[in-house]
Image (cartoon, rainbow, N blue to C red; front, side, top):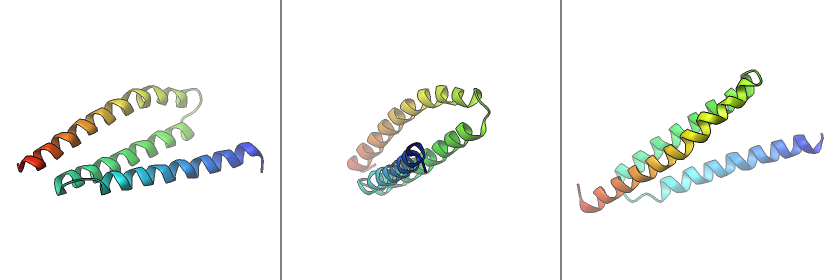
Length: 98
């Protein structure tokens, strides 16, 4: 097995572990039930989107698979900003007792 293959396998394992740990602590650190439901839903959607993105990188023919980076690179930051704002809004509403 060459070093590129080992690096790919180790990198994949580290990436998946990081995603699982991030999702776990994002859900664990919620303050209320509505916020927790939102984070579980957000994590599930994020995992599905990332899996679809990776599958498209592997199965779309070259050079079209590289074009998948354009929507991913645009939509990922937009989604993160949206989810953070929504989570803060939910947290604030739960704190006020709505």
